[in-house]
Image 1 (cartoon, helix red, strand yellow):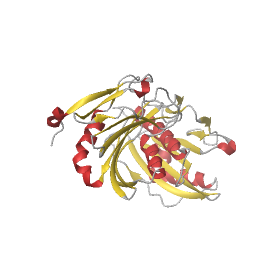
Image 2: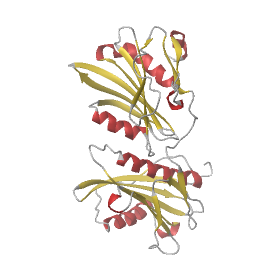
Image 3: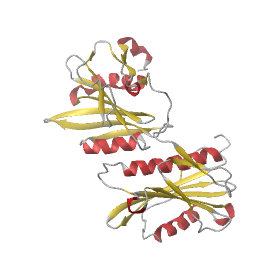
Image 4: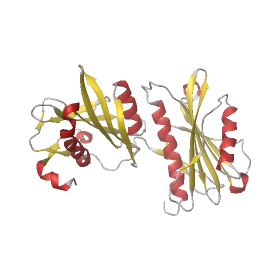
Length: 335
């Protein structure tokens, strides 16, 4: 059923807060209740904070709105994955929702509470330094009758006091490219950027680090070369993989695959490989951009772990996305 005909059964509920990042409105069923004793923080404390709690009179169907302040840039989808794992959710279905602020998530999940099965609809949003989670749930037997309310709330969620359309939790720094590409890319300001002087005069290379020395927890190499230097994307990927092996990391299992982006000028390929380094599991993610001028390959090396309380992998993945998307957009005539 289309969304519009159902809206006569809903009202727009405004939530006011002295903290601008916490003020929002959304649509809930007219016969639902705002449980005013729950949530309503008046300041940010750096933890996941319950803002408001709505539900039907029987409290068998609930919508909770949470906010989490972040200091490092990351995609909400990656943040949610770690939160769900830590809180023992089982994912039934999911979709990624594209956003300039990073990939959002829309997840259907299950969990058993005191022997009773519940179904959950989890939807993320992000603005600046805040990730928002709409956490909606009902007992499994009642979920179908509550799902419309959950979807309308997620569709109508709107920040009312925060400065809108702030994509990043951090400032971005510019990294120039002067040889093959006459445009550069960007990376979060918390990353260390150093030129790699080991390449020849026709090429260009940058080393990007999340941390330094023994505290380094992620690295990205960006390498550009003229078009005639490599026959195809696979060849430049092998070149970059050999450089990774010289670091004592031997990635396996990755297959470079082209990603359709509908751009007549720029082509994109990606691959994920895995390796071991000092008994730690490592992700090696490669992104290749190809144009008539030349090639650019972005190679991320990041630790991966079943439990990642500091969200290191999420931070590293998002930095890679920002870097290559900025170059991709700048290289495209439609960008």
